[in-house]
Length: 502
Image (tube, rainbow, N blue to C red; front, side, top):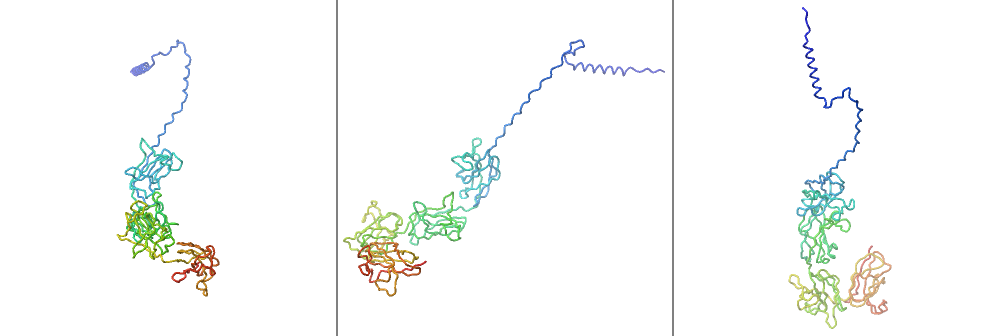
């Protein structure tokens, strides 16, 4: 039997082609493609390329100033560490102490570059530190590398507020401190320091006052590290002033040796010495040497009073002040070498004379006693200061280095005299102890540190100072052939030995 090929596959293929053709027709553009009979068009002109442009530069992010610090300990080295600090440009990192919750005084600063810095160490004055410190960022607008605040270098601000932080500290140090109260000084010459604190062994020294500032050192006492109370300073109160100053010193030289003029420096806080100023009530006192009164003046070596007072000279009657023959007003404190003019004409000068201190309580500068200018007293006891006016002439010598001059510390005379320097000889006559090496003439009065030029002296010699009357030609020594005879007191020649040393 002959088999015939089926036409089904051909039909399926035809249907598939028709479907594809329909799909292509749906996706064609609206404008029909030109037919073979259409007029041909020219080739399209190429689209021109766009001109390339530069990409915009991104705006830099501004540096925000900031600072951070944490709790830390501070010792005598005086260093604090700031954890981080960021500045837009070079400036300053500044540490302040605390003043009622706000930045107080600047106690340290450090220059910083722009950008961020970590663990910045800043040296501060540890003795100005408080339990809370403040750190601030400052600009550097003044002289470069010089902190000019407050004239320049102002604090940095961000969003209208200063850039800073506060942080607590633990002070691991002893701050130098001194407390001295006003007090009375007795004849023992002692003042009591209420309290003193030093971080290391040091000194507390007492100074006299000179124009409101510490003057000469009067006395000192060593201090152990730490706190001390009721520290006693013994001193020569006769050199004191009504206002005294106590200062703390470091012991930087030989341990236990006070050396304020060389190495032992005062403790300083913010550049100022640590000290205390106080008022001392000094003992009422008059020191007067025996002297003649017939020369028209009385010289008082020293007067100590605590208020304006009159220093009055009186004759004696049965141990009491009788007739006033002179007075001078002195200011509070210690007055030395006070000369009091006295009137002796027609007055019986007594062998013993008295000095009385009278308060200037009435009209200032006018002596009113009897009256409001009452005598000053100690413990309600009136004190007379007496001296011998019948002592005559005398001198005092002291051992001294050999040289081309001799110094006689004190010569008291009621008449013109010659001060002679002799080299004594064993067989010399009584009225002339030996060759005269030098001489000088003096008028009546009290003379201190009398300089006598001498010749041909050597170390180890013992010389004699003597007084001779200057009775003839005042410019010429006339003895033994003239009237300038040696002076005597109670039949004893007025002479004093002294040695010449190296």
